[in-house]
Image (cartoon, rainbow, N blue to C red; front, side, top):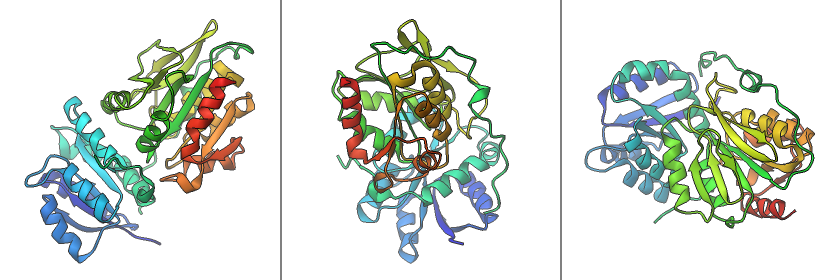
Length: 358
């Protein structure tokens, strides 16, 4: 068994204590050490370099983003950001993802110890996913004990019965689903698209409060308009709708148009929003008028939904292993026979443009 060496860099003694206790009980994880700021961390790393770093952002002597950029420049290492769950902190955390972090663990300002203990499954999942990430593939912008069992629902718990898709409509829909490494992959794809591209709906596994900041950042980089989805938003050419953290997003048909619906509901494939929920709703509402793309990420969320899109006549693509940070979700979709073909990250935008012109 390969043991994951983890280092914790956080100025909160409570965070260091709780995370340390949590990791001590995991047979596949060993705690390399804790540091209260990046300068202490660099001294720690001189002895042995970790496989995964859990990193706070607001720290004394050197902030987390500066430290992250230093790590990615000197020795690229999977970094999980441990960030305060606030709107203000969200924009800073999105900057950390842009600098090379692979995932976010959120923490409240109050009730921190209890929150971290209750979130053990999510924390361990993030660490194990990060350990499998090929961070050298990230497009960085330089300017165990078994996890506690979580009820694993499928998309039926969110999807209501719907009409079958119209056979003919002028509107086309592109559905993208991604997780670990997806913030960089989405930036690569969306910044390469012209303003005239077909309407796009996106599920990126990301906590509540962070999707608005992520959409805002992309909107400043892309020719298309990018926004966090609102209930009943119309899917239209030139617009990218990012699913809200904490809510499922579904595609619905309204005459010959498509709109999104935001719904509460249980976790599906351990996630909310879930790629499976989006993809299955796209299969129901758009059928062969849709293009589905499953991208880098750990787990199997989206594989079954992409299969349903494939069976309804949609074009279905998977990001290839060579360009994935984590070849998990695409691999599961390929195994199910849900994928028309696999394509490199750099070619996904071309596929979307070609689909738009059909």
